[in-house]
Image (tube, rainbow, N blue to C red; front, top):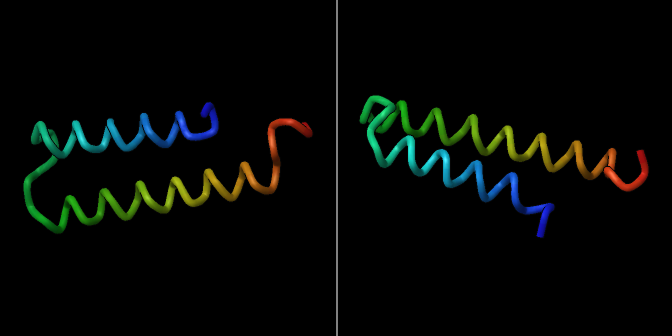
Length: 56
């Protein structure tokens, strides 16, 4: 469960930012933000896969 906790928190944060209108409400800005978040999660998952916390 702890493995998924950062991802869940990040999705909740993005949902709150988009939902509360902190970002400009244009679809391009929202799409760019979501792309950056998805790429960040992918890099985070890759880092955990390559360097598992149990080994180092």
